[in-house]
Length: 173
Image (cartoon, rainbow, N blue to C red):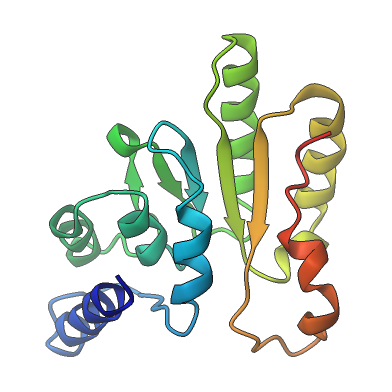
């Protein structure tokens, strides 16, 4: 699986360098192992809400690579959305968190069993959106989870000290 993920990102890079993608792209690398481990616990019936670096998330959640690549070529690399596969991404910092909260509220209201998994960048948890949604969710929702991961390139935070905090499933009481 690791090689498949890397191969896909290299293909996207090639298409970009050939001028076939005329929009920003955000490639991943180096975080394959932890993502594969996380996605083994995410069911196909669960929602995945991602961020601007979403290619791996989409592939690991079961979105066909051809569909992902077609959207990337259309210029939607950082806003991949596949409702059929319960996958949404947003290039807006913290943009996926309120979407996830809304989906989780719908799941709870309709008494469903599936969950919402939100992937955020390592600094997103400092935004007001994060804190407002977190406070609201502690009272209203118990079926959404936030997962943050890092490529350990943050400039302002010693991530190794805070990784356990990031990794907690914090929308759960």
